Image 1 (tube, chains in turn yellow, brown):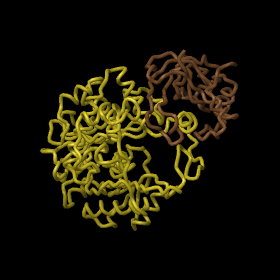
Image 2 (tube, chains in turn red, cyan):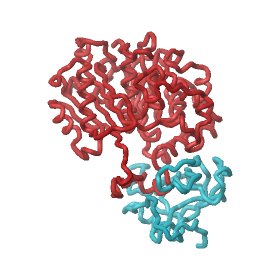
Image 3 (cartoon, chains in turn green, yellow):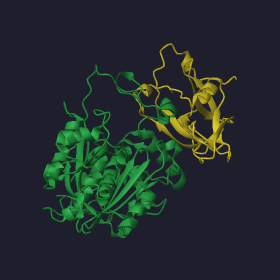
Length: 397
Length: 146
């Protein structure tokens, strides 16, 4: 059964990214941004009969019911999505599937990251030890990677970039251009973390190398924030006050957890996810007006452009050189600034690619609106190119 | 076995980096590493090597995995040089090398390349196993240029 045109995003809410929160709870942030998205859609709580949330440490189990209770909902569908950075896009495809299957009609999808400034006396969180040194992660990742310092994501994307250089040639200048274009976009988005701070290719290449070959300005800044969307049936969407962003296509592919065991470092699972989404939507690559592509690192975008079918394999660098990636250019990419310049609020960072694509389709991206925006491509990427979810959003069913 | 260790076990300060916690599936690997042997698994059906150790074969429901001693030789599949620590416990170690090594038997392992300057490493470089007895109980499997 196809999801094409069966459901739409009708409400969007997002907190402005900040470096830190003070005394916030993840539960409170998840609820607040969900409430805002429901209000944005012009809906009452009683009209929302589905909830999808991320897994969060404050609610080690039964997170969906905890939020349902907090918000006063009566949910016919409640679940967690755990696809790393692809979670936001995965929430939307699952919401659309649940609605299409008749399990529920209106689903709020909510994500949030709090980030408290650590005091000197607070225990440090390191590797997979939880707070106060309690080992919580018993995965092969904790056993066979962390002892070698293969911790976090920087090292993995760096190894992808090194391998890409080896197979297809260096791409540092082109990667830098991606960061610069997205910063230009962020300078047109007052909510972006780096609003008012333009950069040049030289700035990127002169920033310190953190993990070879990636420079500091090619790596996301972790922030606090939250993002939520409301997905409802196409029938209900047509009756609401604002223009919906219809879900026309969705595709997904997961191949590994640790980059060590990825089938390839340079050919990602995006190919399957994006091909599925485009096929379902019946939309061609050249129809896409805005690309909202997960950008934890510049190399992620370069490989995504290739594997999503916008550029040939190995020609992502040439594609970046040939196109203007600014929101007012010929290939608008991440008009909100991307996570690189908007900020990465944990799982909400991935959701920001959904919220921005929806706002662009709705015509609500003030100051950075892409002209004639009929079709948007969204890609969510989790882990180290591990989990991929692609969406096609459109103005018409 | 006479391999040189990198000497961290001789330090008087306690070892603070994360250590593996062997499971029922992986215990033979870690016990062999303590004896400076590289013991990994392969498919009984196809002979294909697999890493990390598992209870279940990824090659099909009619397959089983068996242990065998690998050559300890391979090539650098990819790597990075960390100029900033990937976790606080590595703060004093920069620059250090994290790599994926493709064993001659075909399986990939994430590891460290030691015993050379980071600038001398390249993808495709031949490497050989280097056992690092980081604590009396745990030996990590690292690699150095062949």
